[in-house]
Image (cartoon, rainbow, N blue to C red; front, top):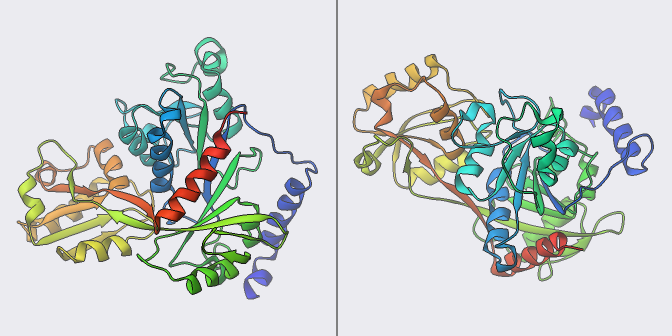
Length: 379
């Protein structure tokens, strides 16, 4: 209650915005020309949007019906140095596009990855590449060669209400329940809790390997989903609208070299120095602690750009642990590769930890895939 008193103007502004879009009063939403899948959250970072976006892309690519179709992903491109609509390529500096879009492009080279703050324009350009190639509006786009999109995955687009997606997915961190959180700056929420009711699907991420029906139902109740069935994964929200609730966990992979000159023998060291620039690295630390003794760690802010002084600090620590491996996240690795601040002495010891997400049960995965393909099916 205290947050609503202290942040009353913020609540009021978000409430007015929600009312205008809900009732199409002054603010209107419109659909793209092709099916779109929106992935987002109401929490400031840390819910796992990027690995979930990769999961959706992987699911589409593995379906035979989509082998000859053109899949695109549109991102905001947080903290990028370029402007306007840009197609992401791996032969340019990652700082032009942002770390997450570059990471996705490297993993999915057949997917058209683009960045644009204006999602309406971004979707239009992805559907009509001739606009970028032949008009003045596209003259600032550095890479203009890409196919017209048949489906677009929208990364971090839940707050972009000008665009109405075919399927809206919202992520919630298992370790940070929104029911117990408050709006920024007192908490971690960047939108009203009531906005959760606008999603078609809610995914609770970063879950333990097993959740019983009782805990699943507790989560559903805390998210305003009534009559939740753990077999059909659906219930109804306060508006009487059907809503689906799924649960996913994180799966980390073996350390992978960041640089070609990396000496993979360091991967077998019993010690590790860890540094990250993500919202929360606790789960990564727990995973690595099963194999390595983490002798030191550096936790920077989300999307942190590693400066020369940052790398000197890391190098000084590494010099005290001459045989220790140095590790970071898959997302941070893109910024490190784009930086010129990494000393040669660190390059042979630097690794990143791959990450992916999985549904807790096969039944959840099957039902989610059914909903996904129903949403992106051509009309």
